[in-house]
Length: 473
Ligand SMILES: Cc1ncc(COP(=O)(O)O)c(C=O)c1O
Image (cartoon, rainbow, N blue to C red):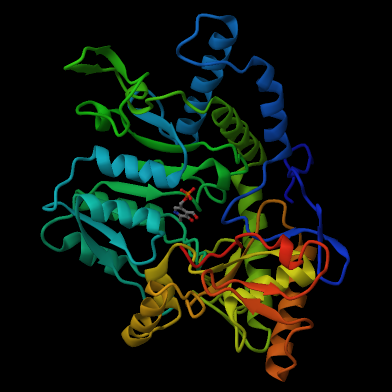
């Protein structure tokens, strides 16, 4: 964990919680799933606990607590704008649930038609692909075999006719961890007169958000504030006309049975009672990251990224997907502290299940809500894709392609990465030697997940829940 200027280490709630393993031992949980969701920073949980006695409805009540809660909510909104380097009054931060909602909100509000082209890329999370397909025609920037693309490929898409109405692009991949040169890409889009919607879900916890983006979306639950608030930042005039994404109370000035006068943004975009606690948590997380500083955050992430990727790549039988980072590289690609990999001869779901059941290590497996990208990183051809699509459409998820992703947070230690590397090395050795697993694991056809066939505490058949399959994407 990096330290702040005063030498204080930030901590996360629940760090090292003991979890049961199938040998009957409890082990401190090794959380290597930060790219999915981060635990709360201790400071965030404390801010929420301090605020709760003052919690009340906002923008609606005349009481002291309502005024205080409204001030806390608006101050959180201001901090989200500052975090994006986009000050009021020209920009608006709409507080919503998460990145997915933020992008859907924007897609609705931009009032595109099928004649509009949204230029996006094949490396996007589904959240930055599907909403655009509903409202416009998509054009894609293709990636190379290593999962990256150059500025030239982007320029081709920007120059093609008709000119795109928007570039919707991620600031960092949730699969390969690749950080495209986003500031340069935004500048290029602007040179071509194309505004940019930046999916900052993965970027925001690791790097500053470039203030040059026109629209930004990110999630509190990936930023150490898992209390249900996400953010859409956009120029105020995006919301000047037309009906909002959600219609209801709080978004209006006047209503009669036939007509409505919508109020000004941002309230116009936030119908219904807002998530005040989520906003307070987000504000606290932003303050903590700002206090820690980007230099310390980046240094920690870069060091762990190398350790993780080089460590995995050195294991016999392990293939790391995405751009290479070799020890001798003069100009290594910028990467988040995550690695997505496969173990030859062992299903990705079984690797993830063994890491959890035998070592207490939490990772994600599957397609990471980025099916088109994963298919490319795995180098799958159209016939293989058609075969698994056919199986999935018949309810059989057993052969769904995928990989395993280990992703680090600010709290991840070298020892935790070492624990993962040792566990993956043991799994790879079992696979190469044909030794198999210490207990049988059975696969669930409908999720693709594996479950150890044992009566150990926490792992008996009766304790089997719906599973944590990632196959659904
Ligand atoms: C790059 C990226 N974009 C968008 C999302 C969607 O975020 P959320 O699930 O918070 O809406 C994710 C989530 O993993 C992501 O990694």
